[in-house]
Image (cartoon, rainbow, N blue to C red):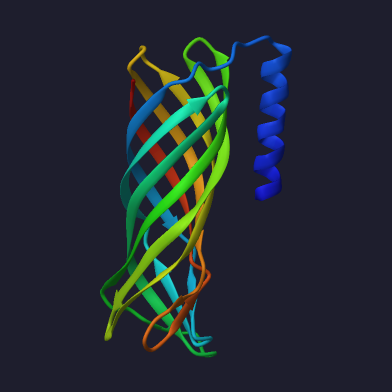
Amino acid sequence: MKKTLSVMAVTVCCFAAQNGFAMVPSKSYVEMLGKYTFMDDMDASDRLSLDTDSGWGIGGAVGTHLDIIKLEVEVATQKNDVDHFEIGSRGQLETRSGDVQISSVLGNIYADIPVGKGFSVYAGGGLGAAYFDLSVGDIDDNDTVFAWKLAAGVSYEVNRHFGIDLGYEYFATDDASLERIEVSNIASNNIILGLKYIF
């Protein structure tokens, strides 16, 4: 995944340079984010597999452009309902109500390349921290862990002050150590829609 996004970013840069697109002028923005989230199945203490439904997320970002580089700070949260969990080697399935919620703060950096009038494509990623909260059955605990993401998408500036982003992100965290279990393989594939005010 990291290699694919890196190749994508280099390809876009070369394409933009060959076609003579102008650099993006320095400008700042605030952005509201909506996310549709698909979490991977998570493992817990080698005996429990957590399966979740698709979920949702919201967030916000503040950033600035430095030529074709875009820097931002993002705060977001996402929530997915637990569908079922699988216990032991027999694969016994049990369904209990519950959810997984992850709140994060990330510092992001992107290459943001103009490709046409009002349009640009971006690719990059971010690092930060996440608050992982699991509530299912008699388990209700949380942990603060390292978090990171890779992302790519397309931006469109409606006018000089308003823009729209549509993209994809792979978001992941370190294992979460809860009171009774340790949860691993915490990752999510997210579709993101952003509404941006540029100033």
